[in-house]
Length: 114
Ligand SMILES: N[C@@H](CCC(=O)N[C@@H](CS)C(=O)NCC(=O)O)C(=O)O
Image (cartoon, rainbow, N blue to C red; front, side, top):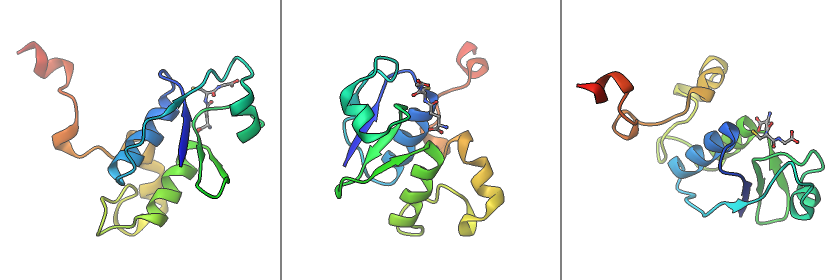
């Protein structure tokens, strides 16, 4: 499995956070989606990050589709649920807010000021 990524994309952050939650803490392969990189173009003709290359060579694109795939591969209760109880549609719509457990969330600016 290979995650084609860059360091600034919020979509990459969603996919990577979800991957870590599901136990796939792999080092991302950094690419520049605006530089027409061969590696990225070969995997995803839209040349966008994130692109997750599965072990069978199939590319997964769109961060929320990656989240859905992770949920399918590593479902709750064995793994943290990324989409809420039962993976219903309403919970899926909230997925972009990121599935970070409260203990892993960075402190808010207001709590840091205290
Ligand atoms: N809808 C996509 C958006 C991905 C996306 O737009 N990624 C940007 C980086 S933040 C990108 O690769 N842009 C390259 C380009 O548009 O040429 C997702 O959810 O993953």
